[in-house]
Image (cartoon, rainbow, N blue to C red; front, side):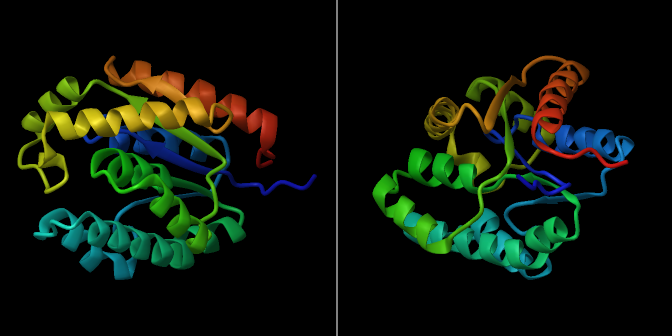
Length: 213
């Protein structure tokens, strides 16, 4: 079986779990191992996505279906302009948020019917990540971090009950996809979390991917 040299890795978790911090650390570690890394994010991690990001994070969208469709449109453009070209060029892609976020936030948090979301996702044909790091943190601990960080965006400001639903949906996803999703406790010291992520990612790289020479 032929595998691509660069893995497609996503980082997931509720707002305040430390995705950006850990993504930066993981990207440096992958580069030290010889990978060319394309680090990106959703929503808005491509040139045409800035307006879409602004709409969902700063706008006044109250309809869950409208919010969902904007996220899917953003992902379609992101895949076409950033993720697929990088993978085809042999790079490792490291993405903060991807399809699991849609399941957790739109289905789990907003209550979009799973069958509706499943049908739309299948229609879009988004590729599945090779590996997903789920940074698990309690909604209360994440909320404390967000307060220290400053002004919250529209989704971050959803409240503890909303984030609890999202966190529950993430936990369900991790149970349903144990081969792809690895769960890492995210409430400990930054370096401790980073070390556990590296151990899990290294295990996956050894088992499934070619290491650059």
